[in-house]
Length: 433
Image 1 (cartoon, rainbow, N blue to C red):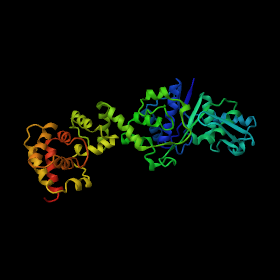
Image 2 (image 1 turned 60 degrees about the horizontal axis):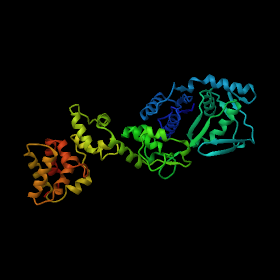
Image 3 (image 1 turned 180 degrees about the vertical axis):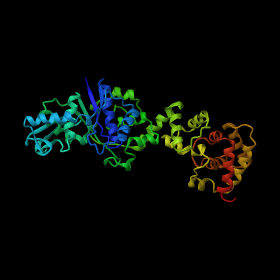
Image 4 (image 1 turned 45 degrees about the vertical axis):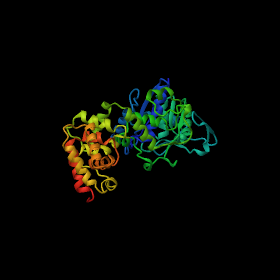
C-alpha cells in the first residue's frame, strides 16, 4: 500500500510552499488508495511552539487534508533515534565526537538518486562530509530522524520540495548503513514569485493563514495549489477536489519552478465565490464583519443575504466584499477622494442630489424598480441624463464610483440612510453650484 507523509516543523506558521507539499502528498495517497500520515518534527525544543502546531493542524483541516492514524511526534521518539545510532556505533560505522555521534562517509562513492520527477541524479560522496546522527544535546539531526521514521512507518513515497535534493544522497547512505529499504523519491519544484525568484512577501502573503483571513476559500486554495507545478492536461483550471484526486499523477509534475500568481488566485477565488450558495457565504461574511466591528445583532439575515447576492458577482475575496460594502454595514461612508472629485465637484450636482432626495422622500414604496422610475423621471424633468443622477448618487451613498446597480444598492441601503447621505453630500461634499 502507498504511504505518503507530511512532516512539518512547528517553528512557524504553515508556509504556502509547505501547504502545497502537504497537498501533493495527500492527493497522491488518495489517488492511489493509500494512506497519508502526519509527522511533527519538533525536536527543536527552543523554536517549536504549541501555537504554531495548532495553526498547522487547523490549516490542514481547513484545506480538507485529513490524515490517517495518529500523529507522530519526533520529540517522543528520542530513545528510538539513540538506539539506531548506538547500533551503527557498535558496527563501527559511526563514531563518537564528545557527546555527539557521527556517521562515517566513505569518500569516492557515487550515490544514485532515482527521482520520479528529475530522473537519475548522481552525487559523489566526496561532496558529503561525515554526518552527525545525534547532536551533543541528545537530539537527532533532520536527516537521521527522517530515515529512521520513514522506514519504521513504512513510507513508500517521499514527496517534498526540490530544495531537499541535497539531503537525499545523505539519507540514502543512512538507509544502506541501517540495512533499510529506501522509499521512492519525488522532488517537486519550488514555488517562485512572478519574477522567478524565491517566493517572498512582495509576491503576497507567504503564510496560508493570511489568505484564510483575507477571505480566500479552501476549495480555491486547493485548486490553485494543485496547479502549481502539476497539470491535469487540457485547458481546465477550475477543478473540484474529487476531479483533482482522480487525475493526479506525479509523472505530470514539471521540473521547473511554479509561479505563484496572486492575480490568478484571486480570479480563481472569485469563481468559487460566485458558485457558492448563500448559506455557505453568510457565516464567512458574518465572521469577517464581526472581526471589523461592523456586525450588528439587529441585522436581518435575509437583508444580509440580499447584500451578498448583490455583490457576490463582483468580489474576489471576503475581504473584498467588506471593502466594497462598508457603507451599507456602517454609518461611516468610506469616501474615495478620487470619486468625490470626479462625480461630486461638477456644476449642478448639489442641486440634483437635493432634488433626487426630495423625489425619493415622496415615494410610498421602496424597491429597486420604484427608485429607478423616480430617478429616470426626475432626470427627464431636469433635461439631464439619468447618469447625471446615478453617478453622483452612487458616490454619495456608498463612497465609491463603481458597484452594482445603483437602484438595487439604494433598495438595500434603505430610505432613511439614502436620503441622509444624498443631502449630506449635497451640503458638505459638492462644490457650490
